[in-house]
Image (cartoon, rainbow, N blue to C red; front, side, top):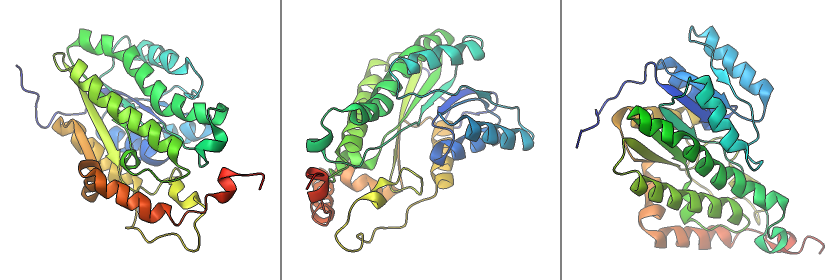
Length: 277
């Protein structure tokens, strides 16, 4: 079996990043541009994508291809995959499934309503559909990488964050299955598991805490997380958990359950479970 280079260059690689308008996706796009990658960027907010494209071009890099879309709409991910392949003339080297969303609310209240379904559409079905759209081209080209961004909350079942945690747990399991399915092909699968990161999606801050929120370790910056992803892409890794202490709940599930019990007991769930009082 051919060994992959431990420090593969990113210069000239064709990369699609979803959720590129803010947070980890935006920071990653900037760093990949600095590394010489050819970028296609997708997100819902066109104006933010245009601002990012202007910043990348101002840094002396080729302007990225902008493919705005709402991946929470069924069918949009497959369409985006085909649009990206067309823009890159039929090939792509790296797909970064970074786009994600959350819903702070009780499972017993939202059930499977439109907001709940949108979380799974964006966090689970879109990455699967996008991957399926580009894998044939990667196999034909003889190389490629699928990057799925999950979360440590897959192992920490906090109240009122069940939709986000469940969708990311499902994506993590699907990522492992996809890696096994493609193990005899030239396509590599990388799971990125961010710990607490300073982004707009840090929904733990939105929970209705009884009293002050519990003290946690300071969140890492989106720039720091992006730098680790770039390093993992260059090294050919198949899993990145950062910061390293985030491994604890993943490798020792009892730790995740203990954290959930301690923190969850301080969340005021009454209004969310019975919003009509």
